Length: 306
Ligand code: PSU
Ligand code: MN
Image (cartoon, rainbow, N blue to C red; front, side, top):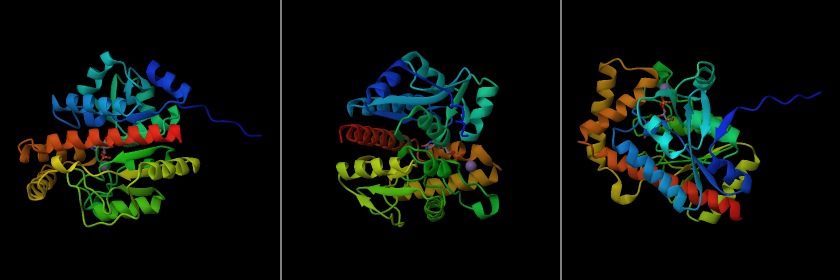
């Protein structure tokens, strides 16, 4: 006799619940990148507004994920946005049971947590900035983001501007392959790295047509698994490569010297890069995350019309 598992409890906003029950397109967003852990204030609010607008303009409904007052949420009401923009606790997928059990007031969901929530809600597309991955020096520290396994495992397609530039990018690609995560480049042959459009690392597939991309996503969803769509930062907003590389080298040195480890590494390094580029990394960051939200919205819309 088979018994079904209890469903993961996700509270949907009215707009998201209506869209899902009508079969209209929905795009999930994470909340860590918009919190004090991702972007400095007030740029975080700008980024969130732009992502929401980009999804709406594409004809899809935005569903920001978060933990609020001990509940998993997909879709927040306007007055609730300020909760995630402020001080929040980082919640990866493994933290969600604790966030529920301890009734966290605000948990900012990372990529892995957002994917778990999106899948439970039945949302097929998810947009973020740059995913977490295999950290440099992981052969010693073992630091590999839970984002990677979550991208492969959950039945949701993720749009990101490749992986964050401070990661070990070749190992990140290898890990995605090992996990069985399908990965395609949107208009690119190589892996983009966040504020950089290009890296030397080839992707297995380049896709240039939206209908082709949406057919691939539809097929992937039939397998009940997830995939990564690597979408380069728009040309005009990419960070100068040399400026970026210098800031990154400094940020990584600082992280090591300060003994930062674990979940604190990503927020620390992102903050140091913003400082070292005199804030130039921030407009690039806003542009790429909105660009990903737009593409996710277009794919979600194409999926429902095909
Ligand atoms: N990309 C950004 N800013 C961020 C993150 C990604 O531009 O803050 C967050 C995402 O939520 C991602 C998380 O899931 O960092 C990865 O953290 P870690 O490396 O600790 O797994
Ligand atoms: Mn980590």
